[in-house]
Length: 471
Image (cartoon, rainbow, N blue to C red; front, side, top):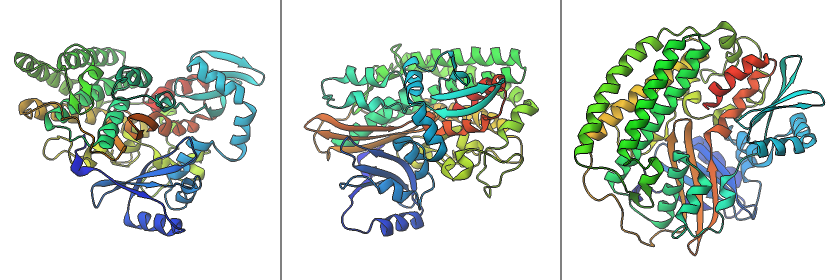
């Protein structure tokens, strides 16, 4: 939810001081949010500066090499190199050999199990291939990167809004990050009342998504009654979301420059009364969640995921890219916070409406990874309830849409904290049409954690994979 005053700084490279510039940014404490490359091969890096509270964007007009140079100073750039250009080494050779299978997996949309020459191949919905031999996961391979931006190039955003929505699907964080980038590129100042509506819709989505995840986790722990109660609670949140957006779904309430189709007046009182009911129900559910006891095999498998505290690994040595490098620092959302990285785009957005005292959650203590993930998820649902209460108690007044104008530079960046983590969008316009659009998708960043499932039994991997991917 960015206003014009919080827009980032855009810098185009000039001269041969690339390495010195990147070293300076790293020493200053900037965090790499995203990297992308356009159709002409020009790379871009997007950072957050905690001192200034703004984003900084470094553009390279000469072509490639910028992301590779950044990997020497920003460990998470290694992950971005893999997403943009593919992995290196022996796993890269494997991907070349299985290029047809990977393309087929993407075509299938991640569903079903098919036979391969060396055993079974499980197509997962998270964009991963799990090759199985003797009932165990032999190898985990990432499929081709999904790029929803490809179908957006050339679209005239002012007149083809439905085409944009169709390309981005029903992913609210993806659509919102695109809108924020578009508003940044055009110089819109989004009113506070519209930012509040967007924040409320995101928090409702977070509650519903986290509740679904917790329901899966409860099933894994054999708490089937609790799992059913969690699913029922999530259905109530979905009804509340429909009420807030006027029954048209979350995306129908969002337009460039603000929000529409959001009910006012007496409906707000009904929503508030319903909020009190689900808040009381959640208090009871959260007490049940605190008694979780995950299976030992699940905690043992996830124990190899590295934590940020001293970067020490206990138990079995992690045999995946996250251990060989430090690219795991690119992980975002509840997964990253469960591993000790308290990063949250809401805390870094000065325009985000939040209650006093709110801060990102990071799990503490030496409890198992899955228990930390449950702790973070349950805590964030409680936080979302508090944020919604603050927004509904004193909703900002004023217009819901900004006056349309052409004051922007034609290039923008947007980011928001979705249920799975931070979603970013880099957008470039040329004469009102989309020249370049790139996205940072939490699922793509986090799915490298699934390499810890190599060597696991297939049924164990099938249980843990959705929990790792937040799917």
